[in-house]
Image (cartoon, rainbow, N blue to C red; front, side, top):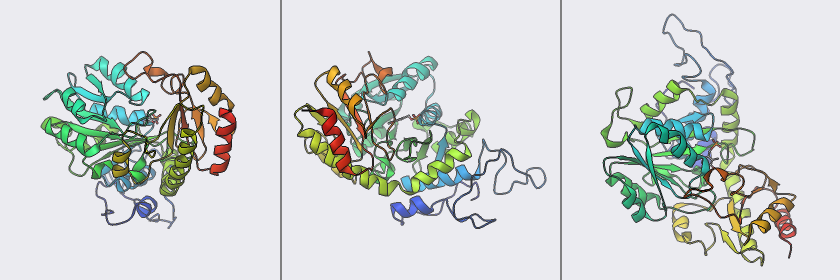
Length: 404
Ligand SMILES: *Cc1c(COP(=O)(O)O)cnc(C)c1O
């Protein structure tokens, strides 16, 4: 587990094998089968500059974090991965590595509320401009791009909370034609179901808080760069390199929003079962989406696995299953608030992607930060994160909460 930027070639191994083994060789000194929690800030040097395995200080690198980063690079089939203290810390570091004052970003008009807040309220104050568009429409994205100024197109697919699906290869073409990067927030699909870097994206971001961690016990984020990805517009980064990973790695250390050793260890533990969990999340969600679509108190259901979803065919092409997130509309604010207050197995809470089922009201909870903006979500919308419990219990719970 040395701190190196070189990875073995994992591209010929299957997803589950990569998730369980990449970056996770038995510990060199003890044979420990699982990478230990290196709860340490500094490392003895064998003479000045004589680093063992490249470790010097844990903001720069820590062996537990290295294990997670190597595993994340392998599961996304990227060149390098960087683990952060939250999804938003990952986004912030990536965007500051890519953008300069006067730069421009195209973002989804249904982006995660925190992404919108970061771009509009934080980066906006540093002179970064942005245009929200419907990223399901590549022509709208092309029209929003300002050649020479747009550094990146940001896309979330499926999106939070409206479950919109966008065409990654088409958007990669649109972005690359303009010299911009395509950034994919892959939090909802996870690399178990969708690998954007193999579809043309330059970089992936994750809130590992969600499915990758998977147990609602840790907050974290990640950036994974594509092999060969460079900074937009031929720019040179602070290390004198044009490589995107070098610029992100520099800022991870220079700004320091790293994942701590215990958080990295929990996230790596979660990653090992991601493939299995996503199968069950997807299976349960598929059954629940059909149940909701047939229910008289539900007006519409947003789930990429339903043939009624406007981008169902695209989702089927781009994803190997449809994931565990469903949103539905009840027709009124009152009925939406009523449903979310009556479930007993689904817990009323923000966040998503854990083994347990959660339910929430985006307009008043997770997406309160976009009220009044172009990204405002309907107030009769309910979002569920379908867990991996027995589906009969989940169906019975929704049945009693919806009433007749
Ligand atoms: C939660 C979430 C984030 C932000 O991640 P944190 O870990 O909460 O900082 C970003 N994107 C999406 C799609 C999310 O669901």
